[in-house]
Amino acid sequence: MANYFDRGRAQEISEKVLALSNADQARVNLNSGETGNTRFAVNQISTAGDVFNATLVVTSAFGNRVASATTNSFDDEALERVVRTSEQLAQLIPEDPEYMGELGPQEYQDVDMVASSTANLTPAERARAITAVTEPAAEQGLLSTGYLSHNTGQSSVATSGGLFAYQDRSLVTFTTTVRTPDGTGSGWAGGGSKDWNDLDLGDIGERAIEKAIRSRSPRAVEPGRWTVILEPTAVSNMISRMMFSLNARFADEGRSFFSKEGGGNKIGEKFLDDRVTIYTDPADARLAPNLFNGQGLPNRRMDWVQNGVLQNLAYSRYWASQQGVDPTGFVSGYYMEGGDASLQDMIASTERGLLLTRLWYIRSVDPRTILFTGLTRDGTFLIENGQISHAVKNLRWNESPVFMLNNLEELGAPVPVSPTESGGTSPTVMVPPIKVRDFNFTSISDAV
Image (cartoon, rainbow, N blue to C red; front, side, top):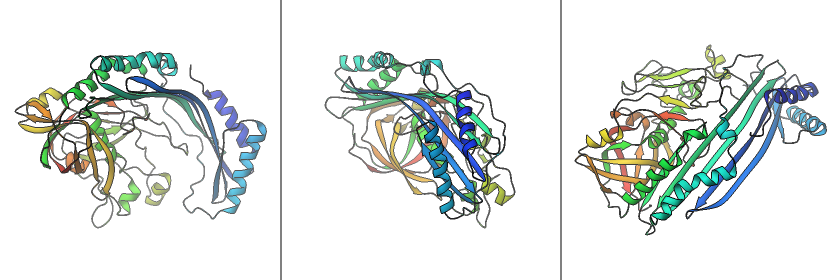
């Protein structure tokens, strides 16, 4: 079983630290856990490691003068030292006019987010599992690389106001890129979940191998506006950019797409296709979301978009107090409702378009339109007359998830994916594959 502080031990350490405090108010953030990873390249394991780490952060406040200090030592002398350091720092710095004080007791969801299959995952088991990708790749003369990462640990928050929040959780992700020896073909596949048993490495490897073989010797197609089918990981790459733009303060201050002309925000306005509904829910164990933030504020179910209408924006404690409303939950993992079309249905219904496996090197262009730029990667294919005809060279795109979700044609069933470009562990998102029209490509890239 993974090595981390259980609820009793976390509370014991936190109360010990708070008892040492001389500040007007104090907060203790404690995180601990065990992380394991195995990396492979050229069909062989190259590195593997397992790390246990624990970090304690003490925040001290004298009036509105607030500062924090951190330690990863837990003997009495170290705990005393980190408390005094945070207090000394707090006495030195200017007042923070937005400091809201520490929270008192709160109520939290009780969700089981630890999967024993992930918590008990060993280096030997990781090594055996990876052969489900490396051996078939080698047998077909292909080169596989990849990364398997998992974490099981806890986070907790305690305050001098009597709050104690505790959450433990497992997360695991696996991604692989398979290339052809001539360097012209590349295929990617991956997945993420809280439960190791949810990941079928054989299936993931088979998909990456198939894409690598099909993507050999790509041809160039003209940039412009294309009908595009995005696989779920590519969808999450775009939707996540919009989800992290749902900041009420930015909108109310006129700094985001969700700012309303003349003042205020767009809550209640329709801004996407009727079929788009997205929510977050800390009670949904599939998403393994954060149950509270670093201040101990509880997360709660939030309907962000319903049938294309903006339902909510995220209000922090400070901004909620300024606007005379209650603070909201926040985005941590999310679920986007889908439809009944399969990926094959979407391809079959496309006269001429592109199939995208995933998006890469995504950077912001304009926050007022949530416009981003990036590249396609590891499996970009031309569809002609309802069939994949051949691989195409990668393309640079300039596109907004808002524009994209107003050009929807078909949606499939949501599946869990890891939304990070790097394949690192993070709360899961569940999104469908989608087909959209007029996706904007600006140039060809020679990158494989």
